[in-house]
Image 1: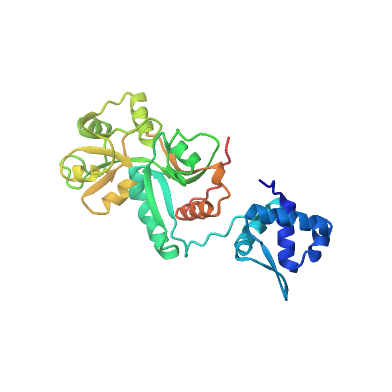
Image 2: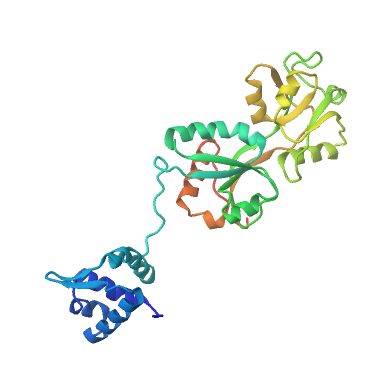
Length: 307
C-alpha cells in the first residue's frame, strides 16, 4: 500500500489546477520525472487513471473529481488553513439540544425559552434530562449541551454563569382557614406540611439542612419526590409547601394558591447554567448559552473552570 503524504495530495491538486504535469513542477517543488513517478503510484493506489489527456490538457476523472474536496481539506489542515467553526444559523437549523434541569426549572425556564425559540429558531427542538449526579458526565461526553439549576455535583472543568437568585416561600391554598397574609413561627410549626425530597446537593436539599440547623421540625404529612403536583395537592388541602419563589409565582397565577414569607431565615441560592470546557467555543453551544442568559435580566459573566 502506498504511503500517501501531503506532497502526493499537492501533486494531484496542482495537476488538477494547471491541467498538466509540467505546470505542477514549480508549485510542488519536484522535477517532472519525480511527479510522473508519484502520479503512477497514485493511479495504482486508487485503481483509477485520475487524469486523462485531452485537447484541453489533463482532465480529472470522476473518481478524482470526487476526491478533490477531501484532498483540499487535508491540505488546508496540513498548511494551517483549515476553516474555523462554521457560523451557527439558528433560524435555519433543525438541531435538537439536550438540557439537564430540575422539574421546577422546567416549569420556570422552559416556557420562556420555548417562546423565544419560537420567534428566532422555530425548527430547534429541546429535550430535557433530570439534573442529577450524572449531569457532569453527560456534559463532558456531549450527551447534554448545558445544565441549568443549582447543584453541587458539577465541578471543574466546567464553566458556569449565574442566571438568577432563588429563595423559598410558603405556598398555601387561597382559602386556607387559618393562614391569612402573615405566617408566624407558631403557625408554621402547627400546620402540616408537604416535604419535597430531592437529592443531596440541590437547592431544596440546602433548605432542609437549614431547617435542621435551626432545630425546626415540621409536621410532615406527605413526602413527594418532585414539585410536580404540589400545587394541585395544596389547593385541595390545608397543607403548607415550601417552594422556590419563581415557581411559586407561576403557580399562584391561577388564583388557587397564595404565597407567604417564611417566619424564619432561609438560604437563597443561585440558579446557574453550566457547560463543559470542550464546548466553550462551539458556535451552537455558545448561541444557546447566550439565548438562555438573555432570558434573565441579571448580568452574568461566565466563570472559567477552576474558580
